[in-house]
Length: 383
Image 1: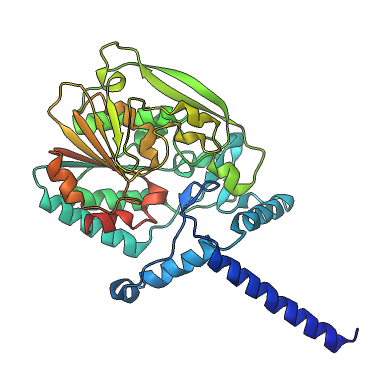
Image 2: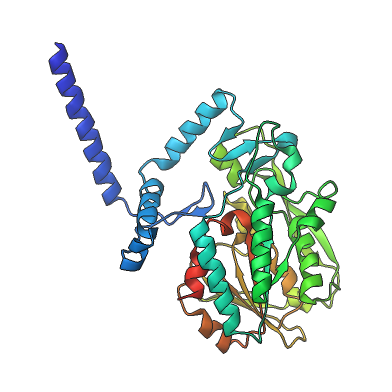
């Protein structure tokens, strides 16, 4: 075969491959969630003039192409395997750290998203001056456990971003719940974060809850026993990075010692999207799933309500990401009703939720990495 013919056949094959990949990407339905990365994937964005002029449409379209590309997970695994073979300390934004920890990089805030979110929080508080509002912005593992990072790694200064945000919302009348000093003081005694997953542990969530009690005026008067329900948890950072030298994690649940802790034992949880009710905060059947962290409340839901028998005149709106899932059972001891909303999935009017449920307090609970790169809260508050 002469050189000209070979080049022609190679060109035709290349075009055919591109055509097949293009057709497959069109025909295969979009995926909304990645179990491997435990995050929402960008679905096809709707075009509006405002999102186009603000530059959001092009960004979402780019993310859509990246997230929905056919064979994406396979390409991620190949890249991770290559990085490991080359002895790299980082793969897909995850670092191999001391004491068998895997830690994700610390995101720099999307300045436009953060500005819009702060403005929406300011307006939201102005609309409900009689409602007490709190914001628990949790630091990530690479912040609190920075001493375990590789010596050559320098990450973004998450503390600066958090300090600026807390200062702004304090000016709006929203009280920050800052757990950083509490976590730093306890990090050598308690495993605050999973080694292979980006979430805090139940021990970390409980420590954060005790700090929240001091800010929110709640009585920390319930004692708990903790139970290990899984010893071989491999989390999202294990899957995302491909690093296999991490140590498996234990998942704990907390059960009240006090027989009078009615908020845990006799609450009714109603999921509005599935129309199902349960009395269980912990979905133990999910321990056999790939994402065993869903033992805490099950899968993601746009909204659900927790009706408790406790003697309290307070109703709480909890606006959250997945960090709140292991935190919620502790709150049930202190409120008559808790309405839980995840802005990533919630598209209704939040004002109706506040008015129809007699909300007297609002708690926003996010981890910093998610919050600084997300615009769903701003969109929900301004809907």
